[in-house]
Structure formats: structure tokens, C-alpha cells
Image (cartoon, rainbow, N blue to C red; front, side):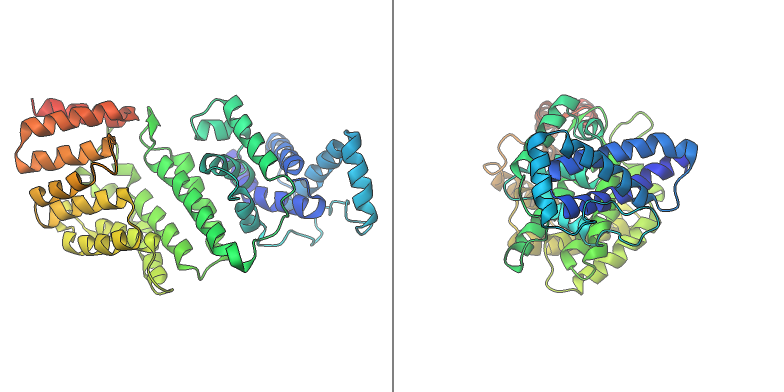
Length: 409
């Protein structure tokens, strides 16, 4: 790992903790977040030459606090609010702790920030953008690139999100809505990972920056909630899925389906860690959607060859999953499991039942094409592959589907 990469990792580690310290001390989420971004930029410019300070978090808090107080004082109305608030706070409340002092932010600041960024008043798109910026420590430009958006669009999305949660207290939600808010946090991290693992548009199939950031943030949440089976299950699912990433594309970026991958390229360390987490998650209470999906991923990863896959067991897990969470994509996965465990005709019948729930979705056509090909209907499979190719915005997926159609001509 290069020195620059090490510094970037260090900055992303401390970003939510520094932001938490400022918001907890000053309030003003939006200005505090801007000040933290300026401090991160200053560190990225100075530390490679000057070296990393002994207390990097204290350095960032000190610099960000100075930027924030300057920013607050530049506006007369904000200055008046600051002066009023200062009368109600300890004299040192606006004094940033110098490097070396033990006044670090509470360990749960990352989780508090995640709860704030996933406020129910925000749309999922806004939650994702704000999470990447405030908790992930990405700049606006990096957030735009991560979401395949122009920087101006990302900035607007983040600005609107910050405006919408302006005035919200910086604290974890009460017991009455904590579970709901945690569910939103995990859903956002799941969406970020999915977009990283299989990009919905663009020239790249895999977005490792997004996938790895989702894993990093989920690890942080698990560090704060180590006994929550949903969190452990989601982390296991991400690790077991990302473990296959090196085998998913060929030398020219072409898509390689699961049953044709070179499994010697799979990351066995990640599989071992993910499998251990699955066992732990399933022991921490009733199995939820993330735990069940992780268990399915573990069965795929444990098979040394595609033909060794335990499809009956995978189908049994899908049966439980779709009863617990009848989500169309889970039902589509179950249709594949039915085809592999029972036969392609049975799988096609399941796909047909989903047509009204996922009208025109390219993944339905892709699965239908695959099962028609297995059933021997080459003409029907070719037409379905073509429809699927027309429905996706992903260049690697389009090329793969077109190639499958051409092969059946």
C-alpha cells in the first residue's frame, strides 16, 4: 500500500468521527460538514510532505473547528446565534481540543451520523449521496463519480439533503424508532454495495470503490453493534459476494457468469471470514433477509465447482426468504434455484409469475433467456437475450447478452 493510499484510508477512517465531534459541539450540520471536507483536503495536501501528525484526529478536529468558527463568524446572523449559544455553554465549548488531548468524539458518532444521513425525510438517492459524503469522507467530486453523476448534480443533491435535515438534533433515535432507522442505514449500505458490485450503467461492470466503501462502513456499524444479526448478516453477504469479483470479468472487461468463473480466483480469506459471520449471524436470533441471503452466498462460495452447488439447499433458503420478504428480485433468484433444483421448465413457470411485478425489467428477460436455452428453445432464448440487452444501461451486460444471442443464431 502506497503512502498516499494509507493517508486516504486514514482520512476516511477519521472523517465521521471528526464530523461527529464538530456537530456535537457546535451544531450546524451543514457548515460543520463543509468544514470537515476542507480539513480533509488540507490534510491530503500537507501530510504526504510534512508527515502524519501524532494525533491525526485531533489535528483534523482543530483545523475543521477553525474553519467552522471562521465560517460562522462570516455571517452576521450566524454570529448572533453563536454568541447566544455561547452564553449557555461552557467557556471551552468552542475551543477545539489540541492534538494529544483525550477529548475524542464518542465511539458511536459514526452510527449517529449514519442515522442522521438516513433520516426518513430524505429520499434513498439523497441518503446515499449524503452518506458517501459525510460518513464516507468523499469529496463532492468523488461522490459524483461514485454515483456516476456530474459534480454539480451531486453537489445539489447533497445541499438539498443537508437543508432538509437542518435543525435535526445530533443524537441517536430513541428506542421507538431505532430499529426503523437502523433498517434504513443497512438498506442504504446494501444499495451502495450493489451498485458497486454490479453497476447499473456505464462501461464498468464492477465499481470496487463503492463496494469497498460499503464494506468499510458496514464494518464500522458492526463494530458499534456487534451483536445485531442484521448487521453481521449484511457484512457477511457483502464479503461473500465481493470475494468473487476477480473472476467476474475477463481480460477485456467482459462479463463471466457464476457457473463459468475460474473459482481459483475467488478470495478464500474473504470467503472464510464471511462464512464465519454467517454462522455468527444465524446464532444471534431469528434469521432475517440479510442473514438468509448471506447463507445462500456461502453455499455458492463453498462449492469447488459449479456442478457441486447445493441447489436444493439454496432453494430451501429462498423459500424462507421470499416468505419473510416477498421482494421481486428475491423471487427471481428463487426461480433460478427452482430451475437448477427441479428443471428449467419449472423455473420458467416461476419467471412467468413475476412478469407483472417486474414489467420490462432486463433481468427477468435475461433469466428467461438462460432458462429457455437450458430447455432447448434456442429461438425463444435468442429473442429474450436481445430484449434483455436492449433493457440494460450497463455496457458489459449489453455485450454479454448480445454475445449469448449471437451464439444461438
